[in-house]
Amino acid sequence: MRRSSLLISLVGALTASVASGQNLLANPDFDQDGSGWELFVGSGWSWQEIDEGACPASGSAQVASSPDLGPEIASLRQCVPVALLPAVTASVSYRGGGSWNVLYVIFHLSANCSDASPPFSGSDIGDPSPGAWARLEVPPSAVPAGTLSLEFRVGGTYGDPFVVEVDRSYLGVAGRIFAGDFEADEEGSTQPCRWSAVLPEF
Ligand SMILES: [Ca+2]
Image (cartoon, rainbow, N blue to C red; front, side, top):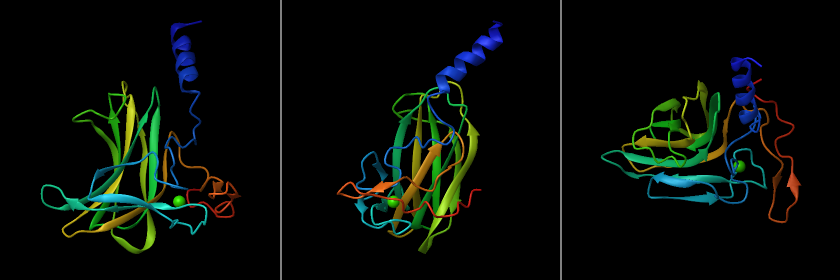
């Protein structure tokens, strides 16, 4: 086997564990709690029984802002250890928010998103959406060599205190395929809340 063919085979084998439409985030739909997520900047955050698609078996997160070197900022994040990903894309739904709201995917050379000055892969910025859910979409970006973790960070900024709600997050190699999973309520009963929806990405 030629060296280039061997290298391609090895890379293929090491990335084969991540399907192209697989969501790499834990608890991306906030179905029953806020596990897997942490506050980055803000006065606090909580899980709430309000779902972006009114699914009774799922909820969302609510993040309250706090002053950060001047403006009010609210930001929720999740760190995902990765290896040898060729590219990544991300999206999330939000409601409310500040004067501008943003989704970042941040590359880290450490495995726990602890780099002091990591390069930003990409971002999407949205206006305040007080009455309806809106969506932020980060286009596919190549993952630099040496990246060991990805930080998914969503939030907003405003001059006055504000609250932003977050739901239906996605981080993957290719675009999102399904609008949701089979959400399960507290009794374990699954509810296919979004399987009749038409996906706007297609
Ligand atoms: Ca949800």
